[in-house]
Length: 541
Ligand code: VG1
Ligand code: CO
Image 1: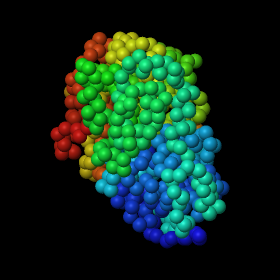
Image 2: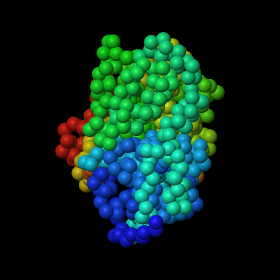
Image 3: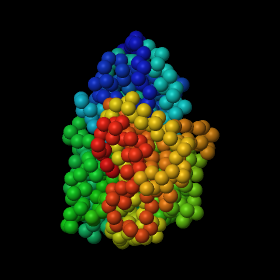
Image 4: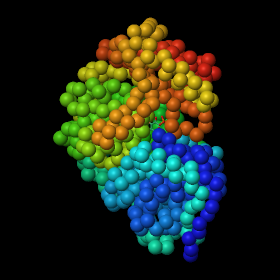
């Protein structure tokens, strides 16, 4: 066995986006591409020698091969130990928990999250730091800088151990420790929630359907909901992780999880429905006859947190990404706690969580979590809902009606225009940006603009500033419009348009109808149709 040093041309496109580096699978499979990026990670974190890492992925095509490459490279560069999920599986929240529990220096998650997988799909690599959370921008910038000049990587020429077998195996001077990917995470969940109340809930005939979308949460959901809590077999569907996610799109929203939504909308549908994404950090929540938007789910959980044992003493504060609706703000005001507004991407919650300034965090894109780890956590969010429903003895529908009656309803929707021409998308944003200073006081589509700006975030803990995080237009009466370009796509540009309005009287209308004036304002201001050539969004959530 020896260490090989391989030379290559540097790559110029390895800038991590909102959540790691994502590219077409074939792009990642081209010679030297993945190893070059891994070597850049080692450079960006000040070397891997002597360090302990956690490694896993969402089971998508190329994960196992990629895990072998990471292991051989970690060994070649002197890492002490890599803790890896059996068969290279680990959900993103489970990886975050393991990093914290084992005191590891960091971790690598092989996933493109909600993006489709397979030879023609997407692949991705995320790096998490010692607190268990996504690497902050200072580190992703250092990784990118290294990737632009680096022309050599080190790799062990021996094969990595068989990852289907639990236990420790040496690889050079490094230890590869293959662990059960579910056990530690399931034990953590048992500490946070009232599992006896949940067992009683299912024993009483409560019916739930959890769609794992052929992605990584299947084994976690089976173990926790069926084996531990007694939900009937079959409550968890699409539970086996498949390399191509069964040719599906593992994004838990009403478009990609439509069969589940249809089932819950039936008169005799289950009491509760949920789905998770490729790497298990997202969640979608449904009750019989109702879809709960992620923004509302976050607000409702914050309002009911004290029904959950881990949060019985109340929340220290809450945080949401900027495009997430202000429903959370209304709850925070009522509770008298801080509510932080951060840029899109979980990495911006890390400092607030570490400093004890916030307990619950969430994003409109179906991410919700707490200070129990440093990622968003799909199964955790589902357990929160089940625990609250069990403690209050109400349905999802009744809980949300009660919530809106107390706090008002922030009608909310996001319209995505996917794979549009990058130059056209940038021109659209530039055109909008140029209008911002003069919008206040103007009337657009019958709505009066109160103020408009481009969001920049000053981190209250480390003082870092992050600019250009989305264009915001506020209207009289509490309506808001936000525009930003996605940082997770792999083809062209994706324009995201986020709309909300506040209603305190009409609580059960169709969001698209309630938001019609805001949608019209978005089209007028951004000239969406002429500039993108699209007459309708690709995805409406
Ligand atoms: C999207 C979401 C964002 C989320 C990110 C990663 O980013 O909008 O809220 O944090 O995906 O989620 P963007 O830049 O495409 O809007 V995941 O589940 O990939 O880890
Ligand atoms: Co994800």
